[in-house]
Length: 492
Image (tube, rainbow, N blue to C red):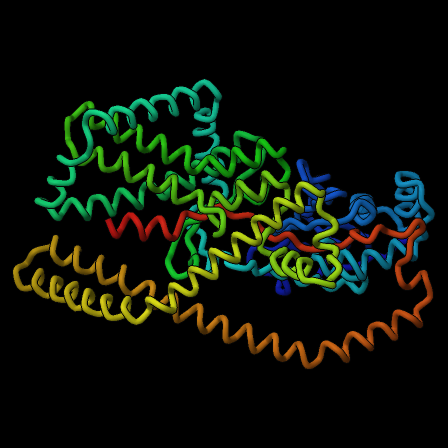
């Protein structure tokens, strides 16, 4: 049993979505560019999910049942797919049930076209505290070429030697030399601040190259490098979604690749100092290590968050805040997002949730309490920066103009970002209120249709799927340059 359809127009797909063609294809069949990856390695779930990478790069989690059905959709007839799935899983499944799974389960996830040939809507998942307004600046092809050249830096002897050299440099700085001379030079020559700012931007690019090179070293293919808005300030990111195919060790290497390249950057600055004796270079050594420490904050989507996520084996910790908190309330039964976790993973996720809620709540309170004073000081500082720009214009001092302009931008970004976040929260709150009014009617209507539908139309397969055979989009995996890191370095 098969149905020939024409591939739908690419106009329905996002700009970076699946390629469209004019050749007729057999339904159901995975969209071109869709790739079954396999079972997630090192998962903290009782039943590790199976992963499929969509043609737009996002990864979708499926139960084993749906994954096997999807993996058999290679152009064969429905009856042949049903037989292959039945033989592999030792279950009884009919062609009608395969068609139901394709139309009702896989097409909404963007893995196959609809029966009528219309293209599925490839919606991007908006993650809590995620990166917004992403714009690629380096293509995935160029990133892969560069990562291929840099991946040799992850050979274990090189890593051990680099970390040992950095430790020796820190001991020397902390016990005998220090950075006082470099700070005095910086105070006497304000133009060096601009040079440090430029070096900071370069180090952010180097950081992202580290993620890409680590991803490539493990055998996955990194995507583009770009810029976006995280919280209230701009930062850089690397698309390493393909690292989901790696083992836990490979994903952790990808997580730590950025800070490892920061360490290499610090070593380069130290080597330049020993070659030239120029003291401000030692400031870069310390700055890069402050950046490294900043990246290990686990409650924001920085490198530390990804490390914790991969150590536990749970892809999106923020999505489990509400279920975990609800499970801790008296008289409430844990939901499936909690019970599907292994006991040790559940304890680890609960610990992360409780600390994250406490830290984020404290940050929110601090922002509200100190906001008036911050606004006052920011306004006074803005006047000073604008005065510096005017003074630079009158005296034809390019350094003063650049320093004032840089300070002005640094002051305006948090205000603009906060306003943007406020508008987005208002928009989301309005959407939630609109959905809430219609949710009850929709739920009752859906339950009524489900009761009247015959088993074959409900998509029932014997044996029935386990309770945690949920289908959920896992979204994209990005490693972001630290927003707070940029603020810390610029403030210094």
